[in-house]
Length: 241
Image (tube, rainbow, N blue to C red; front, side):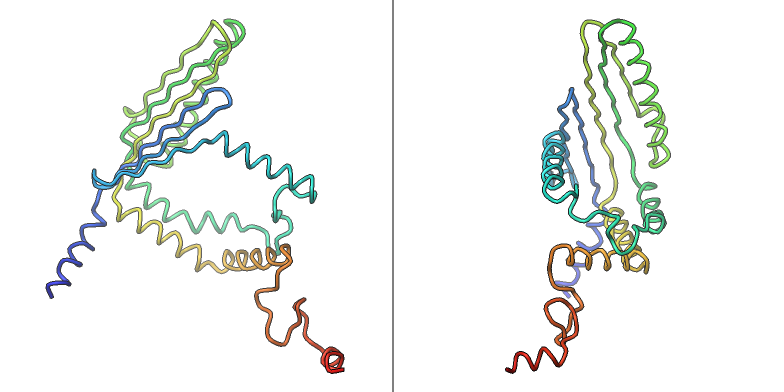
């Protein structure tokens, strides 16, 4: 009893712990970095820095090398899978978990700062107007996905008339409960796993991956040879000689 009560208290407290996710995106020219900081209950802090430009360059280099060697940009093209990707089924399966989580997600900060400039004043003005329009469209889409107070977004677009320039910085802070995130993740996984069409696509794609990799089929039994074909009497007689 003395052990059960503390475990029960921990199980009740953990889902109520507040979580804060701080995202900082910095982009200047062709360089883009993303800083991620997750704080749990004001004590546990997890930090990660992602060099987006470097990762994109490595992925493009690998795709180009494979394309030159095999004629295929990726390992398993989607058109070669046994079943077509069930996009509508996936969206339908994920809709309710995402809706549940977004209703419990609060955006505390959303700052957007941009500096754009062209070769002359007219280009700078056009780029500035285009940037305002683009940011407005993106914020409208974000407000459809999560609860966003109209007073939270702060947007600054500064035209640069001296020289061509492009700089963008996004600072976002989101808060939610740990239990809500865990429940939404489990719900999302459950709906994806128990959907028959998604499960069939994943199974066939994995089987196709084994074929592309030259491996043995996953459902080959003891009575099959190395190519997944039934072993005939001729083989047994041949081996027996």
